[in-house]
Length: 258
Ligand SMILES: Nc1ncnc2c1ncn2[C@@H]1O[C@H](COP(=O)(O)OP(=O)(O)OP(=O)(O)O)[C@@H](O)[C@H]1O
Ligand SMILES: [Mg+2]
Image 1 (cartoon, rainbow, N blue to C red):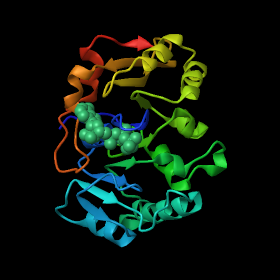
Image 2: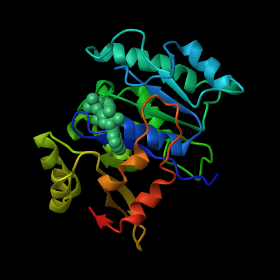
Image 3: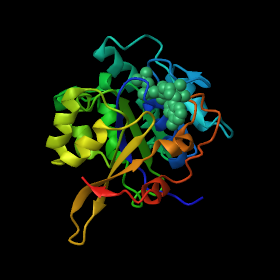
């Protein structure tokens, strides 16, 4: 299978616009193994709640592709509980064979706002670790992809934004997001595009390198007419029909500088 570079991505947009669904489609094209942090019970399938269960899954010769890690207590109201439970899950991933971290997997962090805040101190250490390990292909041939979901751009910490290689936007509804988009990318065009997104349409922002070796953000719009290709029900049973993310970026010919 042709390998595509790992990503550290975040997805934001309005309620029910397809963030969770898109994150699963993306996670599946990057790695055979997908671990989902699922605090609000969005995923079915192979559900676990304890670190030792995660180790059993990861060490098994044959396993379901998607492992859903659902914290044993409802952590949505408590940031400190969320950090604690996430740290428990991470204690397995950072401690693989011979004391080295496991690799070659995607992690979906659903409802990621609980694991971060406006200041760097509020960013969960395990999430920080994952992001710094991701997006480094080909230097780490079997790396890690991490995809975070939340409703608003303002939910993501400055560190997450700095380390992101890719951003996916579904129809956004938070007024502050449009302002922040303009500030972050200096582009009225992008903000206007986001404002006009239809249901299940996606904007993909990605870093590209110009002739002088400088990184700059570009984006393309994935039209609703093709949205079935990233519609993977979060039951985790079906493989992604989104074979190659890059195909979506080149097919529509709508690539633009942000
Ligand atoms: N690309 C798509 N094509 C068609 N239907 C889709 C697509 N993506 C998502 N859906 C459907 O839209 C509904 C909401 O999707 P999903 O749960 O992924 O949204 P969400 O943005 O994560 O919602 P929430 O804000 O509640 O977390 C689901 O029923 C899902 O099947
Ligand atoms: Mg969701």
